Amino acid sequence: MANIQALPGLRYDLGKIGKLSDVVAPPYDVINGDFQDQLYALHPNNVIRLILNRGDELAGDETIYSAAAKELKQWRRDGILKEDYPSAVYVYHQTFRFDGETHTRRGYMSRVLLEPFGEGQIYPHEETHSKAKEDRFRLMSACQANLSPIFGIYPDAANEAQEILEAAIDDATPFQANDHLGVEHKVWLVTDHAAIANAAKVMGEKPIYIADGHHRYETACNIQKAKAEQGVLDANDPANYVLMMNVSMSDPGMIVLPTHRMFRGLPPIESSELIQKLSVGFDCSVVGQGAGLAAKAWQDVELEDLQSTMAFYCHADDAWVMCRMNEKGAQLMNELAPHQSDEWRSLGVAILHNLIMDEILEKPNLPSPLYVHSIEEVVEHIQSGDGAGRDATGQEGSGEPFELCCLVMPASLRHVKAISEAGERMPAKSTYFYPKLLSGLVINPIG
Image (cartoon, rainbow, N blue to C red):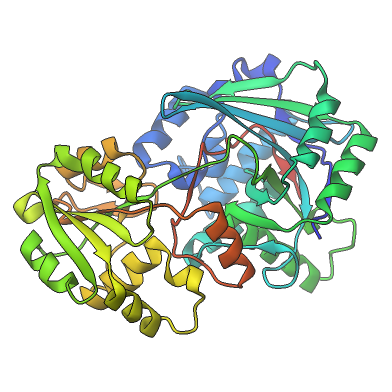
């Protein structure tokens, strides 16, 4: 059962910082080195100094984590950040443009009682990596705060919980920020105890699926466990909870974008060789040449709307290859992953990584690919190559061309629900819920 509570959120005092837009940032894992520097320059109190501290002028045994904690404490002392009283739930709207239309995704931020994955009604849907969890553990332990919300989605056909909270904000004035992509973020405080209790009652019957923030959710569980082992955790400890943005899976603004792959560490491969190798389980054909054909290739993939159809770009001969898995490929996937569910085996990113890259092309240990979401980004990186510097995953660019790129369909909300409830996890970056939640709108103290 989802246990929802209000929280005494830490928020920026606009009288001290000016524009909220100048001090917020997207999640740390989509910020590369150049963007980090831009956010540092934007405002001396930008939340980047907490979520992704550069470690400028570290002294003695200081770390980037202790430096972030030091900033947080100083901002609280100076009144830059103030704690809300009474505690609140925060209705959060994001208004954005997509496919030529304006959309608004509605949700609310609250504390949610932690449940280790597999022991309750909160489910993961993607694999996580130990390095990222260690990084976030050290940061959250030092700061004793959730600096960014987890993104949770839940089934609610009538959007009942959200509507209860929407009614409670009436005509109240929100606080507002615009991000670097032009997305408008509005937040309202709900302090009405009856409204919060009614929404919590509705939510108590529902599962929550982690859409984004798996590493941070698991980190929060690890901090809770560490406190329990030290004997300093009681039932009312805020470390029993995590800051979460909760969005109904039926909300009209729910959009899942694809995450295309630009593969690193591969030798050159021409389209004819790719087709020959994939012929063991795919029907493939060259559809044309040139980076500019990416939009047409993606349009063809989208029109088929099948997880098992994808398009590859081969840099060696500047060619696009359309690939459709056939019955032989489906059988290979069944043999490769006999203990996985049908939903998992039919997932595009699972087919791509587990069958094509690991098994057929025999490249199981490649560096992390560059993940991109728009066709414009695909074309840009085909033309420019793997630019030097750290990308948002922490991978260093090689400066070399991307020898192979893949356009692949995103997992759907149906996949998220079915695979999560089966106790399985999708490959990393199977989904991209757009737009990202901002860090810095509300911070949840846990210590």
